Every structure is written in structure tokens, then in C-alpha cells.
Image (cartoon, rainbow, N blue to C red; front, side, top):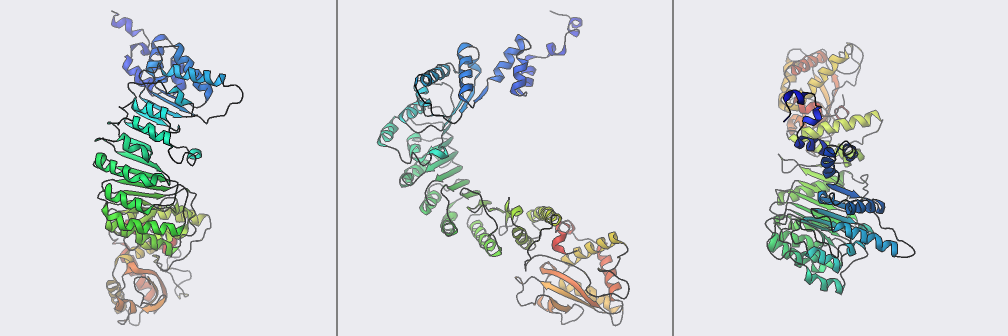
Length: 568
């Protein structure tokens, strides 16, 4: 046994335990692992197990290299835990002799992978011949894009311990194998139930054969076409019977038009799912979207725990058509769904719009995603909605986000369309003042102080009720004979249709139109000072200065409102 003094002269690398070296090598990229394997035999043994733990082969040449290595060096094969073969098949001309020798080499290498846990094959159909005699004792995950055939059925039946099974359909093959032939249907009787299955993706016709007893199935993605829609009821019944309590995620991908009956059947047989995806791969128009919305409105109340609903189709998406009327219609639809299904909080629609429910307000749904950056009208509409619910946490966060977007538009000289319901509080003069030139409430010689003054006025005007605002002005008016303050007020016409827009209203008058209609400052879009009597300007300045010293609890929220919309 070496003494401590002898150990002191050894490099640090020799004093590290093998477990620590294993952690170091595992965190290195594959090229570095290969370099470490060339240092000495000890590091080679440690590195090889991590180099070959996960193998991804993306060309026939790499497949040949890997198979020859595994075949010639038997010590490497047991370390392979995950294998993926993924490349586009290329037709070969001439003799099939090179082709057959290639697949014989692959089959021979597969026989040596005794500890394989995960296998994915996305290549030519000839790989089914490779799988003919393969059996992996520890295989738990199998994914493939190979067309469904009897050899594939036999391979699956030999691996009943599978937890993840995905028979994926490539897009360029999706419309080829539309229905199962009689030979395929006969081979289904050889399928054995997978009692440990937790994830499935593939044709809906296969699932009733794989699920024939209670299984811990949590996620299912069904690929449907016009023919399989006729038999989808058997699939949903199997899921209801044997996985109704554990299933959380369900996806349906169909290459036909929307099936309204399918949504109703899902809601009745699988009411406990949390995530539902319904994808139309052939596309649809706005009228068809409306039909799907109406169908889902009728059945959404059947879901007990639905959190997310993805109603999607292939893009790209054009958001230029999303005007105020279209947004209002979608908003009302989201509110309707949220009322019927309180657990629902996220929805994606076929036109690309994404909606999220505010966690503190059932009736507040907010669009988000790329739509906000593609169409300024959506942001403008969003601000008008958030202005009515300023206390929600989501409103505060999104108003800050909208401020960043509007700043980017301002820097690029983009114009934002106006809207009659946007929140805009502005305080500015429209006449020349006898006490100095410039606009605003004065302080034109000190721009920074002027900005603070205006921000203070904005905070206070937003929070105060019309009654208290009028009272403050009356108090100011009582201190100086003949002083009045006349303002031009733009009111949210959606909230008070009987109040004229841009009406000239003297707030010091007891017959004030705003005071009589009980209009709240949150509903006021713009206040512009029209005129003031002698001393009125100074009194109003002092009033705003006093308000600035006492910011309201909503100060943070109000500072998030983009200056572009406020008008300062």
C-alpha cells in the first residue's frame, strides 16, 4: 500500500475515485470522451461506456461503421442503451446483393445489443427484415416510422414489457397507407397486450388490441383518417375501460375534415383528461372553425380536469385579418368555454391565436405568442381589455410586455391604429399661456421635473373617482375668485355610450356631464386642458404636485402603461 508521501507525488487525476471520473466523463461531449479514451486503458474503459451509451446514426455509412465496431469488439455492445437510426431512404439501382449484405450486417449487430433499452428506427422499410428475429430482453421504448406490417406486429408482440410505443407516420407517407389491408387485419390477432404501456402514438385501430386490461397509460396520440374515424369508437371505449383514470394527454391527428362527433365522444368517454390536441392536417377555413367552436362549446362542460385545448392545423398563419370584431368574437368564445369548464386555462385555435386565462379572473382571457408582435391592432385591443381589469397579476405583466413592444414600434416609426376603447390619459395644453411658452403644465425649463409631474398626475387621475377629482378642483377654485379649469375629456364609449366623445366639460361645474354620468377615471381615455381662468394653471400645477407626493398603490401598474398610449 503506497504511503501518503508517495501519493503526494502522483498527479491529481490518479487520486480521483472512479465514480468521480465517471461523472466528469458523462458531462463531456462525445468528441472529448473519445479523446479521453486514448489517454490510458483505465480512462478508455470508463469513456467507452459513455461514448456508446446513446448512439445516433444518421447515414448508411455511420450504420456500417457502428455495426462493424459492435460486431468486432464484443465488449462494446453491452454498453449500448439507446440506439437511433434516422436517415432518408435512398433507392438503390442494380443488383440487390450489396443491399442484402448491408441488412445482414445490421441484423448481426442487433443480436449483440443485449442491454438495449430504447430503439428508434426512421429509415427504409427493409429494416423490418432486420427485426424479424430480434429480441431485446430489456427493451422499454420502441419508436419507428416503418409502415405497419405483420413483421412489425410480431416484433412488438415479443416485447410485452414496452412502456413507450410509437408507430409514427412520416408526412410523405401519411396519405399512402390510408387503411389497413385484410392481411394487416389478420395479423392483428397476433398482437399481445402491453400491460406496462404508458405512452402510445400510432394508428387508432391498433390500440384496442394492445390495451385489453388495466394499464398505466398516461399519454396517447392517435393518427386518424376517413376510414379509421368509423372505428374510433372502439378505441375510445378501450381507453375509457382500461385507462380512464390514468390517461392525462390525448391527441388526435386527422387527415380529413373536422369531425364534430369525435369531440363529443371524447368528452363523454374521457372526461378526466387534462390536455386535448385536435389537429386537422388538411387545413380548414373560417366557417369550419366556427362549426368546431360551436361543437366544443356544447361538450366542453363534460370535461372535469381539462387544462389545455389545442385546436390546430398546419401554418403559416396570417394575423393581419385579426381586427377588433374578430378579437371580440374569439374573446367571448374563450370566456364561454372558461365558464363551462373552470379548469380550462390555455387554448390554441386553428388560426394560430393562443389564449390564456388569467388565474385571478375567470372572465379575463389574454392573447399571447407571436400574434402580439405581428399585428399592432392586437396589442391595442389587448390594452383596452386590460384597462378594465388593472388589478390582475397577468395584466401587470403583460402591460410591461406591451410597453416593450410599443417602444420597438416607435423606434421603427411604425404607426399603431387608434381604437375607441384604448386607455389613454394625457394632460396637455391647447392654448398659449400668458405665463410662458411651451406645452404641458409648465416647467418647460426643467424637462425632468415636468415628466415627473405628468406621471404623478397620471397616477392620481387614474385612481381617483370623478367625485373626488371634481372636489379637488372645487377646492382649488374656492381659493381664487374667478378661477375655473375646463378640460376636453375622451370617454370609453363602450362603457358609457350616452356620454359624448371629446365633449368639452367644465369639471368645476356642478352640472358636469362626467359627474352626472358617474364616469370613473379608469374609463377616461384622454384629458386635455382646454382653457383656464386667471391663476388656474398655477393652481392645477400645485394640485398635481401634491398628488405626486402621495402615489397610489397602483403606481407600479400605471407606470407599465406604454407612454405611446398615455400620450405624454
